[in-house]
Length: 109
Image (cartoon, rainbow, N blue to C red; front, side, top):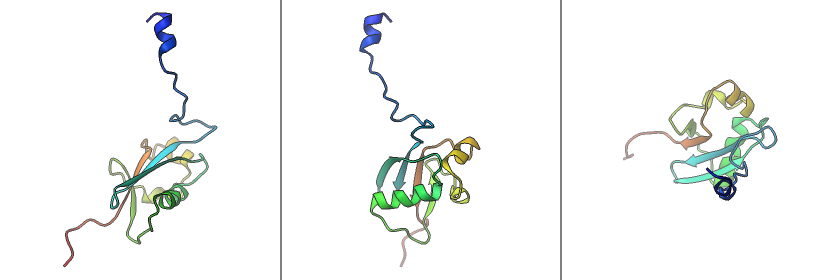
């Protein structure tokens, strides 16, 4: 590419990139209500705290049988006490998108 073309290319402002200054941007989908929220958290925030924030932003109440998983189905319940830094540094997940899911099953009589 020549310089004129390069100058016209949009510059990415880094808002979706994870960095030590701002922390990761996460997405939480509430499967039952088909709602989704995106927000940035600190690297020192726990997954539990991020999940709590997601409920607040979604305007949803937590149900006793709700579970948290990644968008590809990995159960994140064992990692709720981990900080974002621990989750990603220890490779518990690469995903930045989480799903809040309830119990599975057929229709109730």
